[in-house]
Amino acid sequence: MVFDLIVHNGTLITVNPAFEIIEAGMVCIKDGRIKQIEATPLSSPLPNADEIIDAKGGIIMPGLVNTHTHLPMTLFRGLADDLPLDVWLNEKIFPAERNHITSDSVHWSTLLACAEMLMSGITTCCDGYFLEDVVAAAVSEIGIRAVLGQGVIDFPAPGVADPAKNIATAREFVQRWEQRTQLITPSIFCHSPYTCSEKTLINAKALTEKHGVIFQIHAAETRNEWNQLHAERESTPISFLDRIGVLDQNTLLVHCIWVSDDDIGIIADRGAGIAHCPESNMKLASGISPVPKLLETGITVGLGTDGCASNNNLDLFHEMDVAAKLHKAHTFEPTIMDAATVLKMATIEGARAIGLDPKIGSLEIEKQADLIVLDTRKPHLVPMYHPASHIVYTTAASDVNDVVVSGNILIKDRKMVAIDVDRIMDKVNEIAFNVRI
Image (cartoon, rainbow, N blue to C red; front, top):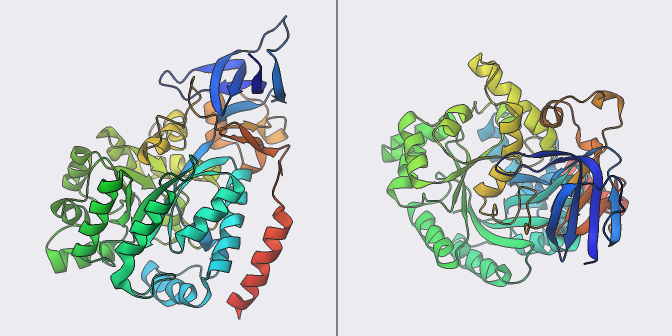
């Protein structure tokens, strides 16, 4: 067999069930899938391949999975910092979206987000926003893998001036993209239990069940949300969502900070996944999600960056570092959230949370060839005793050298292969000039 691509000569971190690490490993790829994983031949030549990436002693690992973001919000990076979430959202972000979110701004801001993610080793993201058809087209242009959720909210929103059409718009999006490309999986993203009515939530969930896609929702993010739901419905956000029947194994709950032991039991029983976004939670002072307890209960937890308006970057390496250290400091337990656990949250567990673990998240035979190569020949990465710890506590996004998605090389030697990043940045800066004034 002549392989399409071979990636070799690096420490291979598979993140397979045994968390196997192969020194001087090799991954052979054909038709977008991994066909062979083993040690690089020492005395014999490599198998035949059309293209070869030499990791030069670096790390070869699965691409990172960003389980929650809002791609077009790169446009609002740093626009409204150091504010409480309700002020940030209602007085800054919602007005900015009404005034500046258009098909053109969404297109260019999504391209920027995808370039940023790929260059920082993210090969899959889970997005939720408005004008998601435009988002999907931009994502397709870049070539990243994505679960894309059409936003649903009971207020006028970009692309949905009449809230009565929010479910119909979501239905049309899912129908357009469910068979269009293997790299994009459509989804529906309901903003939250306090911005969507019970009827809207039930109808949106029914639509996801009909089409076999995931239902995304911000849930239990703030104390104010908890107080509002408790006052209006005598329920916690989680118990309310459970009572109306929207929690199951195809539900992705984002944040889950204000959750009780009973809430955690409900989430575990229903099999819902969680996207943990520690940097955004910290910046907006929303609180700390009890992730160690969630994991102990068997709940699937992935890592997410959230959008650039509340983070302010799409850097999952830094998110791993923060996630590990935040929970150690919060629990006074240095063994909590060890490096292997956090690395799995950014790869295979993130893939599981968004329903893609049979395809991606680890380097295994017949899985999609989504992988990255880290350049470890840098002062801050020398020496290296434990590769997984190195990735979580030492590696930076700028250490990503090569990125492969479905067997296609998208980043080579830290440069986008087919995308003009300078042009994208220039266009976003042009649009941002009007946002500033």
